[in-house]
Image (tube, rainbow, N blue to C red):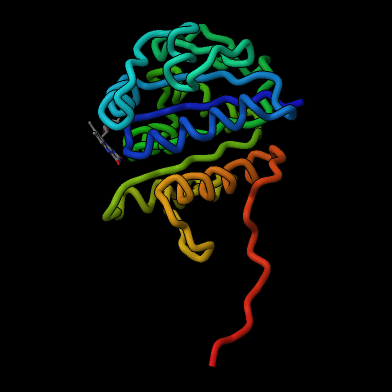
Length: 203
Ligand SMILES: Cc1cc2nc3c(=O)[nH]c(=O)nc-3n(C[C@H](O)[C@H](O)[C@H](O)COP(=O)(O)O)c2cc1C
């Protein structure tokens, strides 16, 4: 049974976070989900999903997942005394989805001014899996240098880039396929994934 920390920051793509949270909550492999949203994350979730997720507690869980869950613990981003701020609290992996270039820069610089950055810094210092799902375009040299620095520290960078080789028919198909890739990287099992089985060369 896994314990996963999920950070949501203020990049576009909050629907990926919602989709991932729903699947983690449904997974029998996951026993606990620690969730923290940055202030900008709260704003973008409001803009993109039309949901009101400020603060902490069960109301935020209901808004994002559409149901209650005793697996999900929501932390306030200002609460630097939260469990996930300490290396003695065992989290099997942390994912920040979506990850803004701002948060990515803070983490790359080792600056921990809120709970999202502190929890990520803890994963780095404890050598535990950290996955960032950045979304920005175009990328400047600062963004790229920060990503390279983090990759060299063992962080997995999985840009929010949907794929088309599985012939998606709807936006939901794109989101679902990408969410399954995130679950693969978190080591959380799921059976519905469409997996590439190879193709014959054309012509
Ligand atoms: C609607 C909206 C969409 C945004 N999209 C992005 C984005 O895709 N990538 C990004 O790096 N920043 C984006 N931003 C800007 C970040 O939210 C901003 O840099 C913020 O300070 C990031 O703070 P955080 O990392 O603490 O969440 C967006 C902001 C808004 C309001």
